[in-house]
Image (cartoon, rainbow, N blue to C red):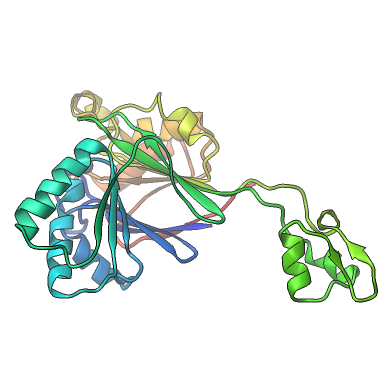
Length: 306
Ligand SMILES: [Zn+2]
Ligand SMILES: [Zn+2]
């Protein structure tokens, strides 16, 4: 299961109610800050989630509404060493701009207050833990090196506790070994195999986060069967021409992608101040019913949907 906390849901400029792009994806003890628009550090404080373990920042692209908050964040860390390290992941041109912001504007020759790493990523898996992976995917938007991120829990065979109970498997290391696929010998000499207590392989949850995007035809395969999709929805269909011109999506386009890719839950963000939220929702809902327009501080869980 993955969790997402929206810190900012506005497009291009903040509004009274919406901050600029930023969201935290959590899985077990892992946390990833995805994009860091201006004001993100205050949103983190206000949300109550805090900076703990927030050591990985993933950037979708280098537009200012997605990166300016990094300057403020680092400036705060210079005075108040709250975290042990910071690793910023992004495409080459994104990192070039971030480097200028952090090293030329904020640090100006000073050392960063913690080990600071800039990790250039290209499409493909760039982070792997025991039970999930994070993959970067190419996205078309203004400029080069725009990325989306796919969080995927690894497939696993569920432990069937009732079968283990029936076989008299004690609680403790025997069960752990069985979960790991090993056979165990019980105290009475009987051998229990992993196949006796594990169910068939089940796919893990798939959660796709796409930042700004100008087209969706190259995202269908990427989003295929996702349990959750977060994607921008900057325009309404009545301004589809302008959306195209600025390489953004309409609510309708986002919803059509969800239908084509058989997505289970669609969450729209990057909402322009020019529209009312209910109009954005209505346009998307007419195409894809299970859709939400995210607000700042909203939290959602993404689980494997059968
Ligand atoms: Zn943007
Ligand atoms: Zn952009």
